[in-house]
Amino acid sequence: MRIILITLLWMAVLKGSLTAQSSDPFSPTVSRSESEILQKAIETAEADPLAAMNLLKEEITEDSSAALEFTLANLTFQEAQYPETVASYKQALRKFPDFRDAKINLGRVYLVLEQTKDAIKVYQELARDGVADGETYTLLGHAFMMEEKAVSAETAYRHALMLNDEGLEARQGLLNCLLAQNRNAEVLELSAELIAEDVSQQSYWAVRANAQLSLDQYEEAARSLEQARRLGVADAEMLSMLGQLYLQKELPGVAVGRLQEAFAQGDLSLRRKEQAIRGLMQLGRYDDAEQLMSEIKDENVQWMNTLMAKVKMEQGDAVEASRLLKIGLEQDPLDGELLLMLAELQLEKGEAESARLTLERLSRIDGYEADALIEMARMDVDLRQWASAIKLLERAMVFEEQPHLQNYIEQLRRMDHQ
Image (cartoon, rainbow, N blue to C red; front, side, top):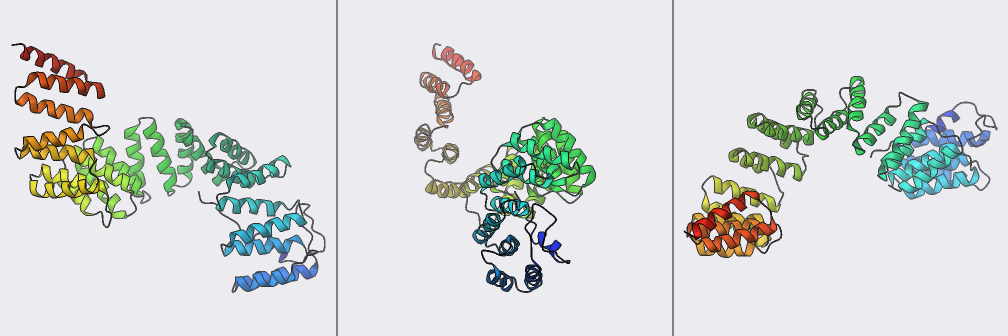
């Protein structure tokens, strides 16, 4: 989650003429000489942040205003010196415990460091003291979401919206909360409101499409993703999802186009790539699947060998399929999908004995027992060895109950008794 840390904001009020006494009870007092130091630090930081930090360090004493530590903390944050940032905010709070802006920014740094429990503690303290504003509640919501506490996050975001009903960050947070709780009908309402305000926000379209998919509104999800695509805001994951929806609708030509767009963007996850390629293969689009695999560069993953071997088998290239199966099984001798394809290839080549040995090996791999036993039973049926086939199918039923197999077993029994 991206947390926006507002730096140097508090010092802006110091640029004017400062009195020795602050009118804000939640901000420390600043002397005229200290205001000049802060002004100089601000000006120096524009060209040389390190020099500005050193300037402040030289001026900070036990008796100096907490504003100096606060300013130093903001500058160290800009330089990603997070331990120093935390230490400076804490020092400012030691000097001036009611320093609200220091507490808020300390919580922000905790969020950047993913120390979410510390951030929650800071923001809850502000809420208990009755000085939390909409921004504070929004940040508290972010912290709860990072802790995967969606209900608590929702409460925080709704508090933020009570104080500012147009708070964009709070509404975005609430949208994610509702999605996390599978309250998809509410997600659709809020996402429609947000999209009406800004159609260019990719996240709104993505969340809306996900909610529609959860509600089994596949047509509506496809429309949302297609709208995002036409607006030029769909990322690779969204385009891949759109391609999958077109595959489900058995529109492979359109699906291939969307999947190619997704692959071309270059940031599609391997999981999505595999899903896309398998989807094409299920529809018999082996040439398209091969073309997409050829676009995956420098990614040595096991499923690539597996699927390419399947493609080559379907294309009738037994030599290349054998080569790929050999490579894959050298990498993982217990890959059930590869062993099943190897047995199939061996049977096509008339190597029945080798195929049976491969299937016996496959029958000892978790999750593939039934497949292996059924294939061996088919081999026995071809040999008219009914009794052996029946035993194998009965064993297969133990691993995976398939009603149609029971009917087949009964047919084999009748044939065995003839």
